[in-house]
Structure formats: structure tokens, C-alpha cells
Length: 320
Image (cartoon, rainbow, N blue to C red):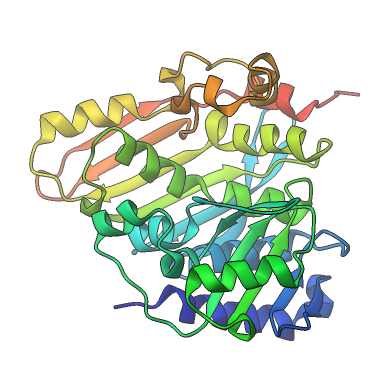
């Protein structure tokens, strides 16, 4: 079985070797945990974000830069292709670990989740386990974790603190924008899972998603980066699924346009909900467009639409 942590560590070490070119910082904590700063105190950038995305997906996807025509301008974009969508996205990339130690908070994603089994029911569903001796974590946070925080993370992963490797990337950074857009395939897989689809039947995936400019603080950037997927993310999946009629129904239900909160920038929706995630329709977190090819029947179905107007509003673009 593929070890997502072994794969992630290879990319982490590559990132360290190229730290100067990537404009990232390296910090070795007293307890031995190694940290890469990809935008908190360092500049970071597009290439740093690409490395972060590669770690998140355990280097099981081809990730490259592209462009996306938004009408008023052509935005940078990420293009993703993977032959291991379930392991890359759900066993590794999915940001399912809320890390809170005293006043520190960050969203954990990437390979280390497979050691912490967070959430356990997901790993039981996809029948995946990793037995690596090192843990590699991506932390979406605007702070560098200290020894107390990293010791708690290491404990949850069942490794020593000196065997823990963390990349920290703020939401309100260029690298943060890149790695969030690179979650497009994962967002579609997660939406299918939430609808009751057996995601183990997803065999291959491709996606292209525009990258948000930095529009303000972490909360505002959380809105614009998610809007890239919600309003302009285009995903393609190859699946093995016996019931074609049932599959058509799933494809129809996936796109974000089915959400009651669809039609305005996510930041606006979040603000109207009193910045309470539980008051926002979870159905919003989905790609704008999904296409699915069923390999046995040879049928292909597509659903959803691109909405560049809302995305441009989210970006706050001014035409001069």
C-alpha cells in the first residue's frame, strides 16, 4: 500500500532543499520538529504553494499552473490530474483535523492525518492505513506552532516529535491561495461522499480551478479561495459504478448551484450567518461543474455551470 507520509516527506525534503528559491523559511524546534514557513513570516509564493499542494496530495497528482479566462481578465489557475483520487484526496488532502492547543488554532491536512486517523470513520470507509514512522502535516494557520503544539500533534500521530514535519501556510497568502484551489478534486469527492456515493469507485480525476488574489485578511481570503472552487471549479472523474441511472442523479446533485446559499460571494454568506459555519449550507462546498465518465457503460454525464460574475465580485476586481 502507498505510504502517504513517505511520499509527503520526499516532497518536504525537496522543499527544504529549494527553500531559497521558494522563498520559504526553515525552523528546527527544540523538540526536533522541523517546520517550513510558507507565508507567515516569509514571502512564499506560487511555487511554494505548488509544493504545499503536492504534500497535501501525497505527491499522487500531477499539479501544474495554467490559466482561467474570467472574462475581464485571465486568472492564474491550477490544473490537477490523479490516478489515485481517493487516497490522494481523502486519505491525505482533506482538511479534516481541527488542531487547537491553548490559544493556537490551525486546520490540519495532508499525510499526517492518516496516522492520527482523523476522522477514523473515513479511513474505515476507504480501507486505508499508513504505518510510516514519520508524519508530515500541512497547517493552515497564520502562526508558527511551538513545542507544546507540535508535541500534541506528534502524540496524536503516534510518532516522536523529532519525526514530525510541518508546513505552515496562512490562508491570506499566495501559497495559501494556490493550495486551496488545488483542493478542487477533493471537494468534489467529498460532496459525492456526503450524498452517499461509494467513493471507492472513483478511479481517476482531473480538474482546473482559478487561483484567488490575496483580497484581505484570513477570513476574506477564506471566502475568495473557496469561491474559486464554488463558482469556477471544473472537475472530471472516471468511475466504476453499476447503476447508471443512480449515477446520473448523483452527478446532478453535486454542483454548488444546488445550495440554498448559492449566488453570492462566500464571505457575504458567512458574514450574514454571523461567521458561524453551522449556519451555512454545507452543500455550498462543491465544484461549480462536474463531469463523470462511467467506464463500464461508456456513458458520460455533466452538470453545473461556471459563474464568473460572482467570482469577480468576490475578488473585488475593478476595471480601469
